[in-house]
Image (tube, rainbow, N blue to C red):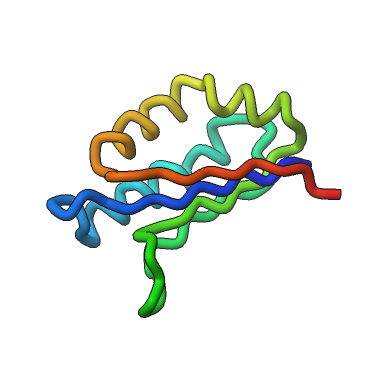
Length: 97
């Protein structure tokens, strides 16, 4: 299995609950639209002292499944919106052994 973790900071003008919920809903809905996703969670409520706005924690059946997800039309729609409201992104993919 492959873990795909992304951390984002929202642009100041987009740092609100409505934007956070739109990202969470959009990404978490992909599990029913794209095969190969084992689990997908978005946390939009960091505790005090955190230095990121939100995190995507997702698991895929394989590296191939992650590739399908990244190129899938439904993911691209959500990712396009996310890119428009975030100021930075940090990502790490790794194999679960």
